[in-house]
Image (cartoon, rainbow over all chains, first blue to last red; front, side, top):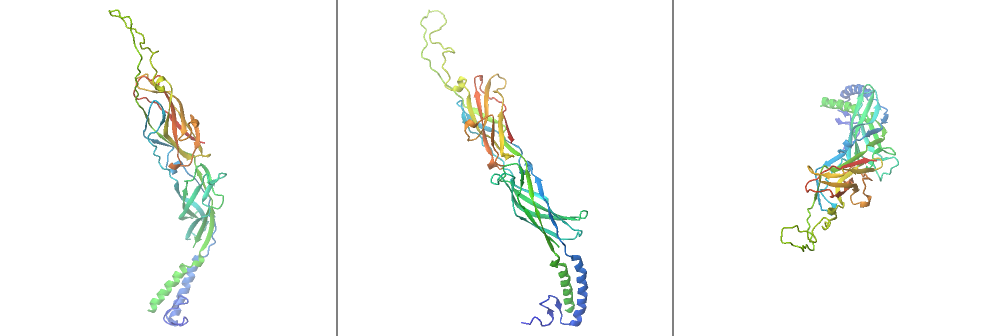
Length: 195
Length: 203
């Protein structure tokens, strides 16, 4: 095995740069590379990321749950006698309501920058997925956030803001009351990478 | 070979500049989510309730009928024990003697949904009688009540309060309708109809 410091034609394993073993031909190449690095580097200046998490608020409708207020069924038929009493007839066949809802295109964060060429990516972490009505225990009623998925980041040249949008999926299967559900602590942590 | 190496060296340098990770920045934000759920009430009902009453027949035997004074010519026979409305036996069924009968139409409605209190009221209303087309014959209706299926009939009322347990069908509260029928003014067999209304309101 060759010592690492040995100069021979091929790749210098310490630096990853190329050495053809001839300093006289390598030198002009280095002269060419250095200006190129200088040209490329200023465009990649470090950024100080200030992320503004947005309050995500929305109202669902009964239509979101896939049901209308009156569900009609065809004939109920039963038979009785003149004695009266209980009469059993056709069973109601109930339609299932939608308890898993996904809201799309929700604004979760903004990031201010006058450079429109950043690559901005975001990941979302649920830190407190249970939403409750103030004063009502979660054992009685709750809405659960099951996932938040990044969908897009757009840039507005007029406001110089990057805006991060995501889709959020809710589980309403344990919701028994109407009203305003919110968390008592941080709900979603947004981690944004800017290059 | 050397020219190729120079080309690769140049490419590597450019690539290193472009993918330089040292310039990436990260930031963290937090979002609070607020979701408002509206009042939702879903009433399942039947557009038509067809109740068939079984036919009924009974025969009453009288003790005797006697005529003691036969003249041998045409005459009216009005013997002892002739049938009169006063001497007819009553029908064996109370319903046919004019007494109300109570029917419990089971599981003819269901409610589910969301309300601020998790409760709703369910009420029922209807006409005083069911009518038969082209006749004056009617079936009287009284004491229309709703009842949660399986609950004691003592909790039945024209309007009741019950729980809303959510929007899934397994959350539904099934309900009955109690109805008293009276046949005192019924003179014809056939189809009788009338509309009853069931109303559910969140509370």
